[in-house]
Length: 421
Image 1 (cartoon, rainbow, N blue to C red):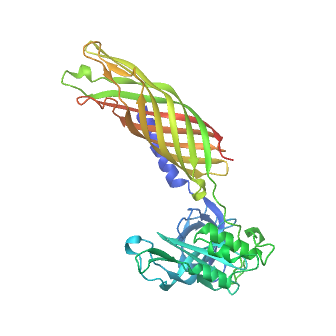
Image 2 (image 1 turned 135 degrees about the horizontal axis):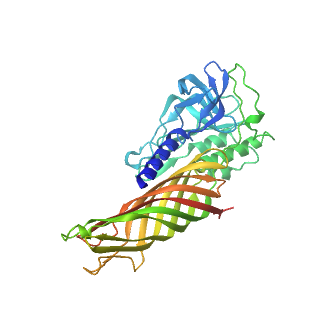
Image 3 (image 1 turned 120 degrees about the vertical axis):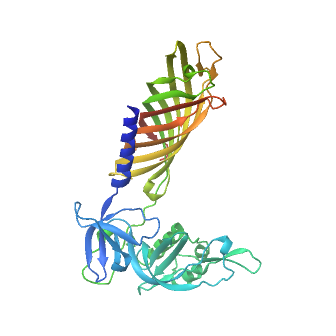
């Protein structure tokens, strides 16, 4: 029975990983400037994409498009990417090979850039591996790099070329922005986005238009899209009550040379469990990643097995604590699937032991570790259900001549409360 449940869990995990990709309403613009409404595969795009997958209809064939064939693409109410030929400095921040030259070494490249802020001035972003660069464009449409570079000075001290601050002072300043604000700007998304939004507000009362305000693009190469301000992911903290039940197995797989009577395989048992969970949903990648700690307070296995007239008994009660991570796959705003993995630390109660009908001293069950794998469903961040498998652990590991395997698979329910508002 346990093998069947485990096979079902593995199949479910594979189906989640392979089939739960979201296609969202969006658009592509080809090299002729023609815009086409499509559904684009949402891959979070932490790094700037080099190609995308899309389909014309919900049941249509999935197609691929490389950046050389696109002038722009994006989601209707979200992120937008544009192709531009720009000057870029690919200097590394790796301290082992950091340059001793202050001046940036610019080279021409045709790249897909993400449009972060639009308006009188536009802010663009490019990321590839450890390389992160920002670009800007004013009303003439020309896209220029915001220069930033780490390097070693003549005394081998790490310093930075913050020329981007001088660029903003020279080309993007208004009465509402002080010099001090510019000198305090860090070369990162939040600082630069806020600066560009404030600068655009100096000239436009409607500087934060959304895609809904943009007229349909005809056959033209004049793109003047105003996007919503990039949504900032928010951290969440949840407390969960986690009752469940599990099917457990236990056997002694290695023993001193006194016969198989001392190596029983106890009958599988189904038992009730109860615990709590603290889950921290990370403020990255649309809140798809989370870390959790879950103590389970009622973990028990009690059995008896008679072999060749000898009665072998086990009484095993413990507290388990899982330290794990979780990845969510959104079905819609309320429903999502998830995969999880964790490391288990198990602490038995003092009366946990394996006994042998008085033929030899009882063995005290020791604390052990193992891993857990699971898959589940959560609704409205309130209710959850998951199937979870725990890999075998040796609960007699402190005895050199004894080996054992305890494992289980079960279903865990959850009711969750938000701790952060």
